[in-house]
Image 1 (cartoon, rainbow, N blue to C red):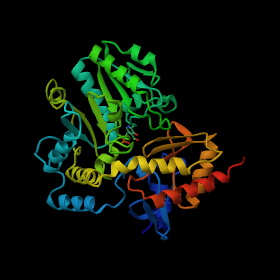
Image 2: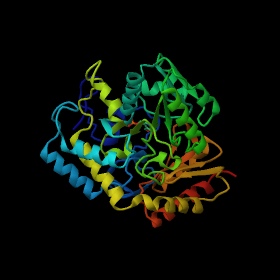
Image 3: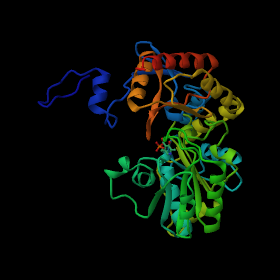
Image 4: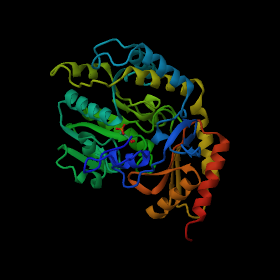
Length: 408
Ligand code: PLP
């Protein structure tokens, strides 16, 4: 195999790494570029047979571990039965229907209608449209340092001007306010269609709100007829120690966004609301949100298998104990603060350069950690929830060793 150079001659490139840099669109200035050939549990194995311990789970996707047999079996079965049949919502596809049913059984009663999408960003888009359609309003409130996706609508509401600026004009009528602030509650009015909030701000480096603030947010939304949208794309499926992040705040949203672990490693997102709201997308205009592949049967079969593994093995019950192990073992003078919401953990260091140095050093020791989009001075730890105590001890030892290499 080879590719043609500018003169049309075969260049003889047959190296996957070179082809990766040449033909895979690069948006990261420094991709990890590991050539992984197998993934199992918390381990990624490269083509030379090196075993990496994965502390980021594909950014909170592989919550039940890589290569789970039940997920693979469900994928194989569904692939053998049928793949794509028709655009979303036209056929009764059993993986979609059964997964929507399982999800709604584990969500508050008002969240009983699921619209499956291809990604988290598309769930954000769908929820924005639903809120505008239902309320007839155009104003949206979102929070500084919140992340909701990278498409134009989602980008318009994410809370960081560095990422938004190059792509203007974006959507109008969006207010970005401070999370957990009184000003945000005061700004909600009868003109506000919806408020988008993460239940824990993940990409800010793991910052939860106070229970009281989230409850006030709910109250003001109810008073003004504003829809409250919770983005559980990163915090859902047991990541923070409960099935959904919002559970511990005793606040129920009008719309919830799901993604990442929702598909068990396959691409899947969803926005979930009450049937009475969702139903409005079927009139004025009809087909108010359209997707060809959203809720693909193989993705739904995989996601449902993953959710069952999560629930049947009681994986969520062990999250807090495992998080406590990380907190106990990760003590070092270089750590400014360690924030842990279950197995969504941020280790704050003094600077971005310290984080880059530690993550590089960890990689040399075959440990994969990362930083956060809006907090590059924090190391991201979000392993598969199946991580074992032995793996936690090994990971912490490597992180401490890397922290030791930082200049005092
Ligand atoms: N919302 C949150 C909180 C996320 O963390 C992400 C992805 O990181 C998204 C939305 C967007 O999801 P996707 O990358 O599937 O579009």
